[in-house]
Length: 193
Image (cartoon, helix red, strand yellow):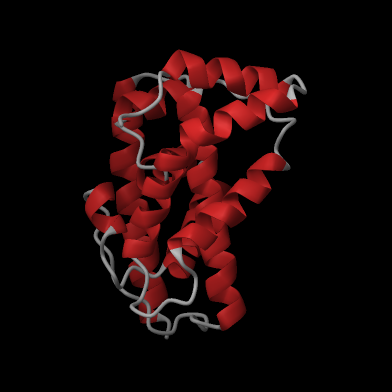
């Protein structure tokens, strides 16, 4: 079973945004598999024995998505980018609530060369990365969004360009500069401990 037709998901998202609850009921089974894929990708990067399970992450994200009914969904890509962002927030909130990271403690130095491989690294510290990403957003919001969509959302350059309504070349430039900026920020954090 492959990805659902983009136009069907987009049509249902727009109907749901317009208040059609039946559209949400039809949309849910169409996007469930991809939401599980995103969640598995996140959970692969978590420590062994993490108490939050993939299905629980999907369920929590789903509950938060239902509260996002007023979002003006652009398309399927936008929906999955928002879903990935929600999962990221859930895991970061969970990590912070468990005290997995004290400021500067146990920071792992991360090379941001390849988004898909990063998500599969078990030692990536999402809290430290989130802090660095917030600092980047204060300096350059668009570069922060590019990282969020590519790294956390797993979007391609073209999909990222579509969501942000910029060119693919701009996405590539922003991606390269943001990786350098974040690497410097994470290295500085690691040196502060």
